[in-house]
Image 1 (tube, helix red, strand yellow):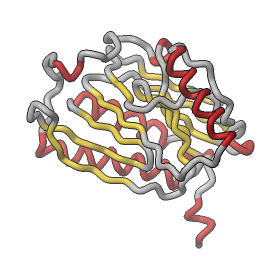
Image 2 (image 1 turned 60 degrees about the horizontal axis):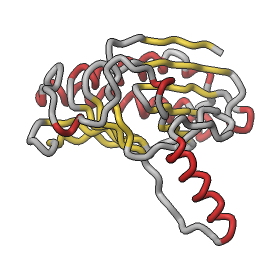
Image 3 (image 1 turned 135 degrees about the vertical axis):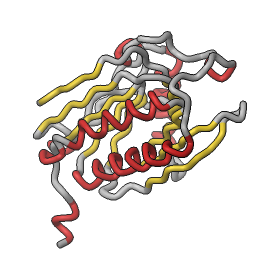
Image 4 (image 1 turned 90 degrees about the horizontal axis):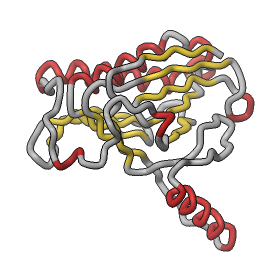
Length: 214
């Protein structure tokens, strides 16, 4: 396994959905927030008694300022023993199992960087009521719950949209599969781009579904 990490000055993310766990094999982790972990277990016990309805689960991250990020890669040990690349940015950890999917993440953030040339997000956002529940600046993701996403799609749907927040400030919304990130500052956007660019350097470890289709 190889690991590279950028220790940014601050981590300012929050997720609307937290999927507890840190193992690529799918083993549930032990979240530090007892009420949230308990809620996950209760929902699981209910699903055993009656069929669960079809669901679409997604994670939304609000990002301000520089984000601490880390990239890990392994030639095995993922789901089904597959190789994987794991990218952590702020409080969101994404596992990718296919080189084509990884390329999609990188392409989306490259498009966002290009869009920002005209949008011009601020480098740092002023304090506001929308940031009242964020973790203290500089807090490492290991000290809080992580939203964990396994990207199993080989060609996840992605989009880059220009939006505004509740106060009318510009926001770039980048969606790839189940992960939706709203970047409020240029520094946040560049943290994501740096992380996925870094991940792109080790994508040779992953199988490429595009080769199988040829």
